[in-house]
Structures are given as structure tokens and as C-alpha cells.
Length: 152
Image (cartoon, rainbow, N blue to C red; front, side, top):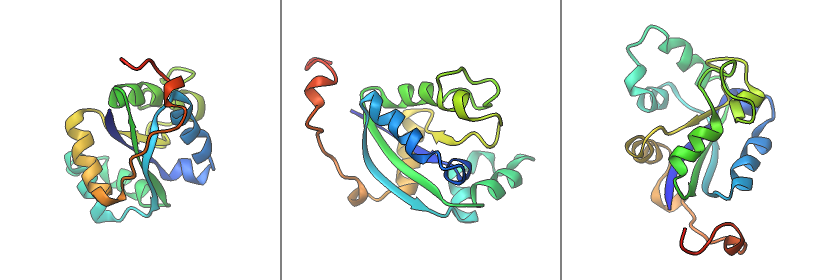
């Protein structure tokens, strides 16, 4: 099982789309093994977006991500990083394919509802920023046998 970080950004919270987005991951068969609502501070934003801090557009990103609460989640399942990224869709909501979260609910590049880790390295780094190990609650859903074959 792989784990990835998913953030429901301020626009997702403000637009009351949290439940609809979370249900997409659950309906796909992923486990949500960690979840919390928090306010991103400027310091936390700089840590999470470290590779972007020096870019000209970073101040706008920081202002956005700190503007309202977010929901941080640990999403777990087979090939979670790749599959979650595909479910989220292209960064720009206007270019995201219909059926993806951004394709269905976003029409912006910045206000694109969701962040999802883009690689195993990023997932490991980002999960450590938002979650302590004791905040992750592993479990096996009772319906696991109906989700995929035992050898998958």
C-alpha cells in the first residue's frame, strides 16, 4: 500500500466541496488513514512549498493557502500517488479533463481545490510536514475483499 498527501485547499473548504471530494477517494477504494483541519501559517506554507518560495508568483500562493482552513489527509491504497494525481486532474481547472476533481469543480489555476503529492519522495516529505506518525490510523475496511482481488 502506498500513501500520499492530499490537501483540500481553502477554496474547497469555502465552497463546501469537502465531502464531495473526500467521497471520490473513498468510492475509488482508497483508505483515508489520517485527516485534520488546520490553518496553514506563512511558515508552514514556506515549508510545504519550499521549491516555489523564490518564484514571483509565490506571494499570491501563500496569501491563498493561508486565507482559510484546509483539510489535510493521508490517503492510502495501491499506486495511490499516481492514481490520486490522475483523479485530481491537471493543475489548471480549465484544462483539466471532465471527470477529474478539478475538471468538474475548478476553473482556475491557483484556486484548484486540491493538492496531491506528485512523487514518492514528495509524498514522504509532505506527509512528514503535516502528520505525526501517531496521527495515522491504519485499518482494513470490512469491504476490502470486494474492492480488489487478493493478489492485486
